[in-house]
Length: 183
Image 1 (cartoon, rainbow, N blue to C red):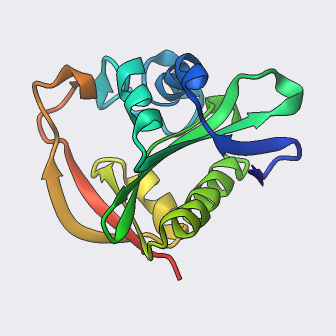
Image 2: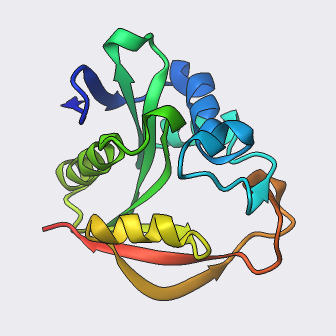
């Protein structure tokens, strides 16, 4: 589909056979000690799972969604990055974004995000991308702002009590909506 920031990286639409590797990638980027090798870890905010096979499969099977996966041909078939796209009316939603911790900070995430934006415009003719980010993740929000996303101030509560989203380590978690115009 698209070449990534690293030579040899290809980005494609994921299929059901990719589910186990995608779950492992997403978990490694956000939870547990392995996630601390990168800067996207949420391990200090949340324990437990980040996603599961059921949630990733649902994205892949939904005709209004895409799961993009980035692979590096020289490294095995394990994904190095992924993201979810979902059509929501006049905009697309961006989520489940993960870059393998050892590959973070080299432009791969920027490349995957750019591919996701182009895919949303091409496939759905949307003009905005929306995402939600935990407000305590100021470093991550700042990175998205450098990519053209704007903080809206619109907050939604963290789903406390729903272990599918993790086990909160603090009582004040919330999500903020970030938006980018795709012109």
